[in-house]
Length: 330
Image (cartoon, rainbow, N blue to C red; front, top):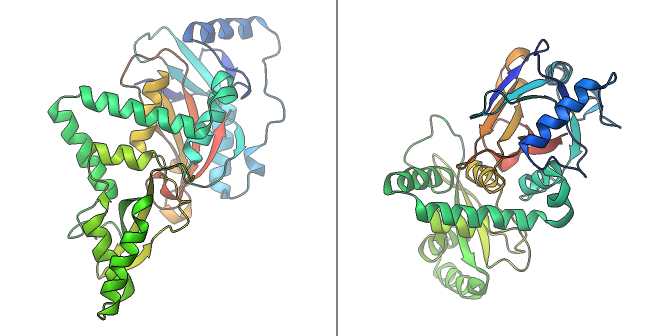
């Protein structure tokens, strides 16, 4: 994958991250832009930059580390063409809504150009799903097994294990919107014979709904954006080691599937660009200032033809995007 180096002495020219209304059409144009900047006496700097010191919701150690990153720049080297390298100035690009569509909203804004002008977050979501379906169909059995094992780990975990790491584990189920009335009727029948409502619902949902535990069910799940046009609704069962904790039936159908690492890799493949999630952890994760920010790379399964883009996630103690705070690094 492309190599990232945080180095203030790097020889590559510093390229401020682009305005979200424009985009570099190719890596060649990125290299050309680098040459143009070298010839100018004053580097191009994005206007109206928000200092990391002024970003709400960050701890002091995170602000200091991110400010150092901005001042030094981040050197990116192309994974194949080692002669091509670019230094990015990573600055805060603003919040996006902390809902299930935050990954795709942030990616749309961060890519800029034609993508931001013509594609909605929902369209990016569907492009990611289509890319997944096509690539899974072409994968060998071993690769399919690895992918589906990761899906089960995230959305249909084995509740007999994992409690040394997790206090709460979630199980995702899908129900067709048209099946809601029939499910409610079956749940009420169990309630009428004396079963507790939540336990009755858990029993019926596990029996009748779709578990997110393989490639086809992941595609159905990740297609859900929380709008009336969705075919399925998400039902979330939360467990502690003692048993069922809560049941989110999502009756208004507004819950969207949060983008995960698989979805990010599919976006990277679709647009032939590396995507780096820049994750910041604070005192809740018991890390020091030097290690409170790190980069999570997602490389396309195809060739890299465009410069990378960066998404910022403020960690909340969980290691995936379910409870993330996403913003764009410009």
